[in-house]
Length: 280
View 1: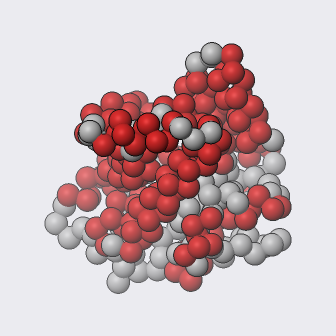
View 2: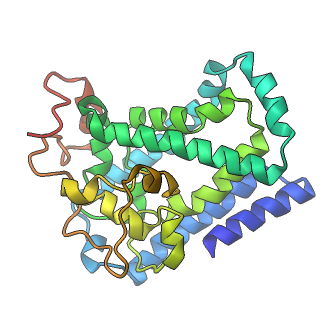
């Protein structure tokens, strides 16, 4: 329902000449707020509604992302990627039907995001950045914004960067975001959603729980940003119908990352001696 509402809002704005960026942001914010309210009333797991000295870290991270990092990336990345390749590529893309453009942009952005995410789990230095996101021992809506600023910057560069580099039109990129933001807003929600066949298309909260499992056999799965297509292609998809509930969530045993430290200390730990040893 949230996905349909977001797409219809974007379509209506595009057909009527409305503000497309607003048409993406407003449904996403409303979905986020609805998820936060509903998980208090109807949680998937009651214990995940109990704070574990993590709420301040999550809230601080969200404030930094929305107030500083995201606006900075939206300004900086187009400047960094300005090339002569874009006009030629844009002409080719613009010749395609709009729906095909959105599909192509979605597949490309999800592919590059998939590999960026997977590399953050495979390389110790990148894992130290990404471990902040996995440090929480519960899943709830605000976890979505618990992320190291450099991790977010890399994700943005890999996800949106290729589209900008190829000169993909702004309305196509915004259509991709309208399609995927509803999934992301609820991806960590502590809600008993039953998504059925959508679990085989999107990285829903049911599917994404496995990614946060505290054991490698369960956790090194479902790397897709909003889609699970590339997980299926590369053999990392995990979904257990009726039982998508890992035994625990958080860092793997033996991980040396300081997950219980304040947000500032976790961010700065990347630059201190002895960092980046991901696991024993």
